[in-house]
Amino acid sequence: MRFRRLHPYKYQLLAEYRRELERRFESEPGGNTYVRLGTDGVLVIAPHYAWDGPSGPVPDTHRNLEASLVHDALYQLMREGYLDAALHRDWSDRLFAEMCRDRGVWRPVARLYYWGLRWFGGRFARPGT
Image (cartoon, rainbow, N blue to C red):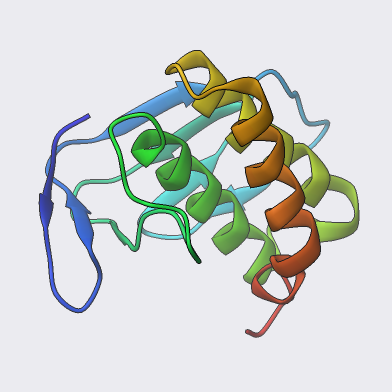
C-alpha cells in the first residue's frame, strides 16, 4: 500500500489498492469514482483516495492503517447507499479488527477496536452523513 500524508485528511493513496473480501454479493454494490466493490467481493480503491486513518483515541500505526483504509471505504459505500449498513456494518467492523490482528495487534486490543466501532461508529455509516 503506497500513500502519502495529506491535509486536511491524514493520508492519500498513491497507487490503486485492491483487496478480495470474504463476502460475495448477488448484485454489484457498485461505488463511486474512488471506491468500488464488485459482486466477487473485490474492493478497489483508486489512487488519490483520501482517508483519516483510525478514529478516536486509536493511534495510527503500521498495524492498523490498512485496516482503516478498507473500513473507511466500506463506511463510505454505506453512507452513499451502495451497501446496506444494517447488513454490512458489523461485518465491516469485524473486518477492521481481523485485519489489525493479521498485522500483529494483540487480540484484546483488536476486540476493543471492534467494540469502539460498534458503540461509536454507527452515525458514520448512515446515508447522507
